[in-house]
Amino acid sequence: MTGERILLSGNEAIARGALESGVKVAAAYPGTPSTEILENLSAVKGLHAEWAPNEKVALETGMGASFGGARALVVMKHVGVNVAANPLFTLSYTGLRGGLVLVTADDPEMHSSQNEQDNRNYAKFAKVPMLEPSNSQEAKEFTRIAFELSEKFDTPVMLRTTTRVSHSKSIVSLKEPVEPSVHPALVKDPVKFVMLPANARKRHPIVEKRMEEMARFAETFPENRIEWGDRKVGVITSGIAYEYAREIMPEASFLKLGMVHPLPKAMIKTFASQVEKLFVVEELDPFIEEQVRAMGIAVKGKEVFPICGELTPALVERGLKGVSPPPPEETSLSLPPRPPIMCPGCPHRGIFSILNKLKLFVTGDIGCYTLGFLPPLSAIDTCVCMGASIGHAMGLDRALGEEGLGKVVAVIGDSTFLHSGITGLLNVVYNKGAVTLIILDNRTTAMTGRQDHPGTGFTLQGAETFQVDLVKLAKALGVKRVKVVDPYKLAPTERVIKREIQRPEPSVIISRAPCVLSRREKAVLGKAFFINPEVCKGCRACLRLGCPAIVWVGEDGMDAHGKKRKGRASIEKFLCNGCTICAQVCKFGAIGEANGQ
Ligand SMILES: Cc1ncc(C[n+]2csc(CCOP(=O)(O)OP(=O)(O)O)c2C)c(N)n1
Image 1 (cartoon, rainbow, N blue to C red):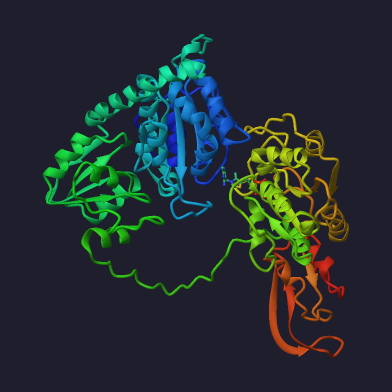
Image 2 (image 1 turned 135 degrees about the vertical axis):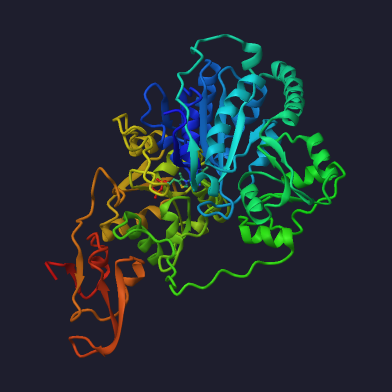
């Protein structure tokens, strides 16, 4: 196995690096682009890999393991660090026993995120070192190095990836997985681990000293290296930006930083003094650039490279050379635009068609159901971060009072409710809010690839476990009105929603039906439906469901009753899952089971 070379994504490589480091505990909450790291550790014997209900809990679990002496890997997407920031900032003070590596998978360009924050700032803010790999080989090696540094300097170490590194595949040389070196044990050390003010005051100077030591270490850290070339242009860079810049200007001199916090300032000075023109090429914030400028060094950075979005080789070329490369040759293939859309048969669709019909103000949350924002459903009015829907509805209730009654509803997915919605609902009950919350319980974390969570009754490994009962949970929080609806039955669901939003008290509607891609259960027929072209009047009511299986066939002509129509709807039978929703909204009875058509 040692020396074997295989193609791995950055995420697979980090998982492998954890194995080659003797990791004992791995905890995460899913989130693109980080999710595959835990999935790749799920079946490893002797390693406890688990989904936590949220990132804060994941980090706290990793901390407990580390305090016991085990090596722990904690994984999340960039916004997950916002959730985990509370323990992180004080973990920086306590330090640890077993090495702890926190992977932050950043998503410049927001391929699948609500913002594109640059989490290098967290390393500086929380005073912890951060490594940033450029490719899969480094992703694996830096994971191992991160564990070693974590134990050597008694600090959590952050490993930052970006989507291109997380998801691109490149060649990795393997080493043997190792057994965890430390035998976990309970060691009492309250002065280090109990952060009440008297102890925390003692720890803060230790953190500052540690960062000074890390900064000295950074000067000789082999992964911070100068690659001399032509000294007319020098480029300071890290991560994927290094790969782009090297490709564009292979002849230039490079200071490639494997550690982006703290920076090797003497090395930077030496490098800067020996090149004619100095660039910092980095994605998102001028994180390195500002620190270089603060050292009194003239450098070109964000005035020539964008601060928003991902870098590309073309953008790097424009910044470094001052000229844009010619646009890539047009291909003869022009692909039709494909906006993200709920699957055919998705249980969320019925709910959003009702919310659209009722013209409610919908405070939304994050998940597949956020697609309810898009036309033609157009039924989400706010979406900011996980769990926020409930607070938004509560704030509107506080602001509008009786005037808002019957006009607002909050929607949240089951995974998101368990991640960070419970306390919001508790607040509604505690402060007597007139908020109606619809929990879209599709029994999975669909958006990130159908991961299990405490509401599914299964662990990361697929083993059966306790399944939290959302009805009992809502009641235990003090909600008196808890109703369960079947989102495939439009009329009764609409009646419940209409009634509950009028109630001047907290109310929860659980819309229960498994994700149409569920591996375990099915709530839809699976059989394709058919629109009778003779009966269809071309009214487009079914098209307003935004189902990808329903298409418009334009034709100027007559229906069976001799009425003029501009076209008719038709179902692509290979896409249809037979959820029946379109048949329910068709006033003319034109839609039914296909029966071999
Ligand atoms: C703090 C944070 N962690 C993770 C994510 C990634 N993420 C977005 S929504 C979501 C959960 C979606 O599951 P659910 O609420 O059940 O809705 P579904 O997609 O199943 O409809 C996740 C993990 C995120 N946006 N923010």
